Length: 450
View (cartoon, rainbow, N blue to C red):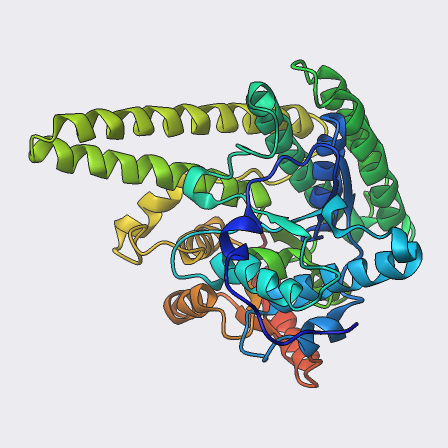
């Protein structure tokens, strides 16, 4: 791969990153949580977009080559994914390779988290390659709760958002189904094989049915899978210690980045529940409604009636969006829980109250620390046998979580472990997990589990 080190200007920060119509392009989705990414690709295909989830982690050396090591680890992983994909496409197609046929999907968030800069940095790197500088980066933002404005034709945006949110919820459920059945499977490997097949079935279901306003066929397919998955459980295997997992959304969800931590916990006798992806979507919507409410109060206090009206409309819009998300999520979980007892998500408003009750942290600060700290407290009060915080090395929100939550949990005599990842294999990590699991098992023997 030939690299050009000088950029003429930064025009591509506006021209090459943004909201582009993805119709007629190959839409490249980086893998975060394996199942959810494929279901989302199915939704895009259902709306006529040629979407593909890129192979992940195989390009890690490329990602490291074009970063300094100071970047957040997910930035390095995803950069390697797109560079390797484009390199292979170039080698496969030769002179027929046209970078304008591809759009790379890299969302962002506002606030102090470095996630907001990934697509900008990726843009700079892609611009250093003459073969790749015309590959556009499609970005959605937490500033409007990841609205698909600009990617999908305007008249289909609402239908697309409903289907894509449902794919997130369905992906969470398949993940939680796996974590529920794998520690108790009748035969080793049954659960993994079943979930891989279930992911393919649900991806096809979203591809066929997501553009319809009635999702009954998707619900039917999901419930059939859950009922089949329950049969993998061996009822003779006794319950195991329950570990709650929180942390930075990418690394805690990306199996290769966290070196399959959940499986390691399971090997040492645990059942694990990880934080969901839908939780983050609900949080961004909730936070926008909260900010609009604050702006409304301040504008009314200052007699700025025009601005107050705008704030009120934003408040109503995001509250209505959140209402529909909760209703859809609760509907799916209710159907699933008729067959198997998987963990539901907390309401975001409840998590904010948890923080306010003891003045532990504040949603005014923002970041994933809001969710992680409050979830740690809820897991502790619910009687979980241990709590793990998974995050990229140097991640600010997760280090805040550790600084606040760890002493609180230690005071409650609940095992807690921080597990930062940066692509290296630390020789003492498994020993730390083994020690943590010993403590969790001892607590389980003494107090049981929720």
